Image 1: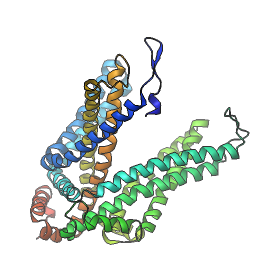
Image 2: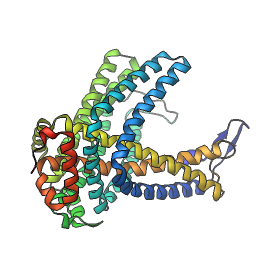
Image 3: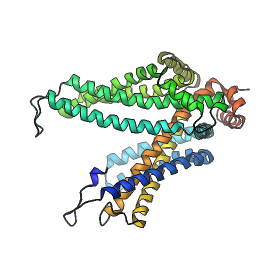
Image 4: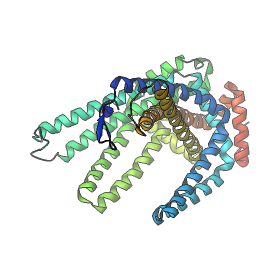
Amino acid sequence: ITLGYRNLEDVEENDKYTADETEVIFLLIVTFIIGFVMSSLTLGFMMIFAESLIKCALWFNIITAGCLAMVGFVSGIPQMALMGLIAFAISAYYAYCVWSRVPFAATNLISAATAVRSNFGVTFFAYAALFVAFLWSVWWALTMGSTFYVVDGCEMNGQCESDPAWYLVFLFFLSYYWTAQVIQNTVHVTVAGTVGTWWFTPLEASSCCSSAVRSSWIRSVTSAFGSICLGSLIVAIIQATKEIMHSIRENSDSCLACLLECILGWIEWIFEYFNRWAFVYVGLYGYSFMEAGTNVINLFKARGWTTIITDNLVDNVLTMVSGGVGVLTGLAGVLLCSVFKVDVGGEGYQGAVVPFGIGFIAGFVICSVLMSVVSSAVNTVIVCYAEAPNEFQQSHPQLSNNMRAAWKQAWPAQFNYV
């Protein structure tokens, strides 16, 4: 971002505006801090207004789809209008079907936010993983570019004697996605282990840097690391193959490549979703990846769509909250530039758009990292409640009573806990 704002062109005056790197870095640092503070405060906010937030997220999807349809009609774009109407109908019907299940999803969110708040140190590993992933992306890009420059006999002007070998491209994409998946899933397993300890033995998981946080991370990078690498490899192979299909489609406009890319996208989503639950079992019980997969299948057999709907309702809220924090941080960036006379956008509308954009990105990224921790905690709470509801009653009776009441309200015929 800093390098991107070295030269900003003013189209109206047809001259160039040079932003001060120091001011841009200052704005980035301050907005990251503001975003972190706001993100931390959202945990308490979600614990108080969890049910209202879930309902707002459902209404937000309906209203957004309706606005898309209206814009399509007003603009005379029938395709947009049709898509908006279909999305509106689906969103409204989905909200109608799951409305009675909102209280149960809210209690899951409250329990997960409570666990993360009690062991807030686990977020350090999430932010550290973001930094490591950034460094890996830079290193990978430099390595890939250098390799193809040498192997393909490229010159300084960008002309190469031959095209890159497809298998070499595939291996580079595989290495990138595999590493990225391992980094992401290591944090997921760490959160699952921490929340599991909070669930069963809360005395060991009741402080910011509790022993549960440290021991869960150590397990994730030692005894559980093989399972993490195996599950991550499966998804990485699919992602790398999809990139090859995308490249073929871009170069040849092949309908078959387009179809295969679409199919691979769905397969990727299925395996990523499956892995989310499998790695919860890895973090909770130390299962191998294959054993964890068997338990995931048993979980879905026992709970079916209940698990998916609860998870989806919460994820909608987390995305909405991240966007809200991004907007607030963006506005804070504009206010900061106005008060302290920080000039990163030049004259005119750019003077507000640029700092808002920087603040929005900073706030959204910081909050998304924290919300990913909450999402992992929610998955763990769902699994733990399916596996050990009585232990939850002993460790956290108030939260357990609220969850039991919500479960009985949503599915009275299936309520069999004593």
